Image 1 (cartoon, rainbow over the protein chains, first blue to last red):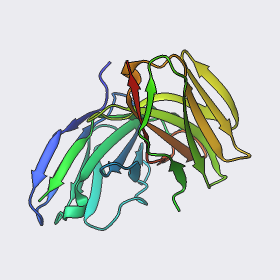
Image 2: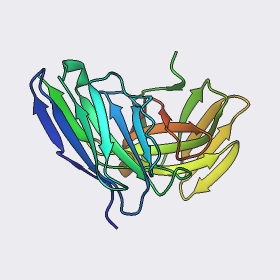
Image 3: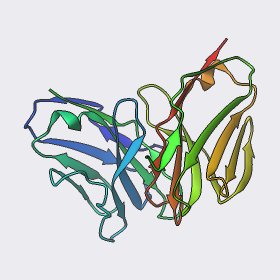
Length: 113
Length: 112
């Protein structure tokens, strides 16, 4: 079946602009996660949605970052007033539920000039 | 100090060699341990996951967890050039669906 998809695959923006990144999880997966991967580094957790529960936002690095999820489907990660240090690959993952392992999408490569 | 430490490599081995990849961690609350493989410009792909201490084997891959030493390993037997990738260890508290804490990844190169 179809895996996790993300769009756009690449995004170049200017410092100070807002960007929106989209994630389509695997159908039927109730849990959705966003991670950030800086060049040559491991993944950093950003935010976690599970069903209708309040999201776990504990990994968001600043109030410029926010995310929404429509029901148990699409999620959007928004970065306002982008900074150069926001340049990274933003990865989305989904899981059948909060008990099982996570499956990752291909990521969105964000470059802030 | 990071919660999960992983030698970044690169680790270069000849085809057919046995590869050993390792991570150490500091949080004794971690209970679920995963290994992901990431090819260049792709998302991480789950290879194996284990719960608590012990061994798990899947084909050419064996994962080991030693909670007493806070040390996990991934062994790859009969390594192939197609195994060339970055290997990321990850772990979570409570259950496998909780937020993952990742190591920085080890880049592996298998030369034909």
